[in-house]
Length: 448
Ligand SMILES: C[C@@H]1N[C@@H](C(=O)NCc2ccccc2)[C@H](O)[C@@H]1O
Image: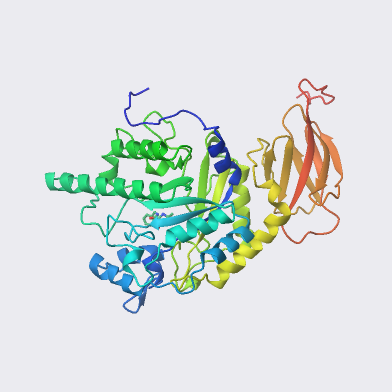
């Protein structure tokens, strides 16, 4: 192994209670809310199809002009308790909030910059209201924090000159101060999800990313940190130069998922994916007709797919500037929540089952309970199940307890019947299994 000063602090998964809670939560929501919600993808009469939270970049708006939007920031319809109820109804166990996105506008009254909610007509501490409301509903709060800050004069994409070094050193101190502020003001925060860390300036300062992980874990024992923060001595990100995951979970799956057959390696570490409902909109965009908008079932399939491979899924919401949500997002939360109410036991606390994936859908597992989550109904009316050697399927039942017939068709192969009534939506079959070592093998391989 290459000797590293700023590589992974720990080898292998964390098994402490805080990490177990992170893992058991499985389903989260992202809240992308900032000044970008005001223009909603349109600038000077032109609508930009790219990610709305990147509008400042697409429309090449100078920081001074962009920050003028602060004068319009007054979410009169914002009601943190309503937001928390919506999350509760959706069945998410945690919410990741953009404390500060690339634009540099802070949802909390930071004393290290003028670019905060305190200097807007709204004035109040939005982040504090959200943290309290979500926590009051028993929902964990995670902080999204963008290291890249387009509005800070000392931010640099790269560090090439002595002036760059002096400026970026000031920037890193500023960022330290903001992170300490967040950890001090909101000590119930359970996770920091860092973004905007791909530029050369950060890759050349791997030491700082290691310092941030250690500083936050010192201030908030048990807090989790995503791999995206981290760069090692050689600028290697997420995984260090020895291939070890940095941080506590891999956070590279943004708007994409591992292949459920080819990418089984991801089951070796903790990971969390995040997704948008349109093709690529995190912040509020006024025109969702510009790209495909996923249906609730398509969102649900991505949630189940992630859990089936031992990962978490975070579904994004981009609130309007007025503090209300668009109807598509309200309907999505209701629809996912209704399904989770009936079937959540195949998600919460579940993990990779280790069985061979079948075309009808995904397996998840919790202890000795194996769940079949069916998205694709076969014309054969049977759901093929292939178990690992030594494992038998004893019984199968729908979650409403109606049993379904199981017929053994070959060694470690079964036909599980489809339910008599067509469920009309993705459904779950719970398997009772028997894992006996050295089971009598009554089948013979063909002599060829
Ligand atoms: C979670 C997402 N990460 C932010 C982001 O910048 N993603 C990578 C990206 C990099 C360059 C152009 C578009 C998107 C997006 O704005 C969201 O916050």
